[in-house]
Image (cartoon, rainbow, N blue to C red):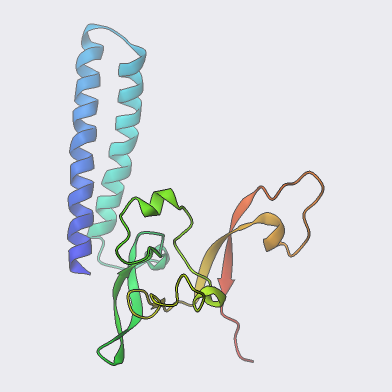
Length: 175
């Protein structure tokens, strides 16, 4: 996990440098003439610099807050896998890309960030699940579903399944 922290910081500093250069270039241009491109670059760079500095502050923060527990596609999280004849927990990226697939697979086939439990023993995941893919242990998760599915209703005429929402899925308590 320490490696992920360092990598995240390096990426943020690289982005910060690029945006500071963009801002300096825009301000240099604006000293001689006002252009739409320079004004846009100044606006965008200023906004991105503030966002990146906020992210760097989060990386330095010693205490945990609720949003630290959120896992997004492509992020690392503790996952349980079968290794050397026993179950172990190790950091794995939250992205269900078949082992050996190129990185562009994630963008070519968007939505491959999770696999439903009822699909894990199907032909696609059967040889992967539990070996190169594992289970993320969580109290709740969000799933990108169509609005009518979340509301447990049929499609309304003319609705065409639009309106995707992040639905919170919680483990039911045993009462």
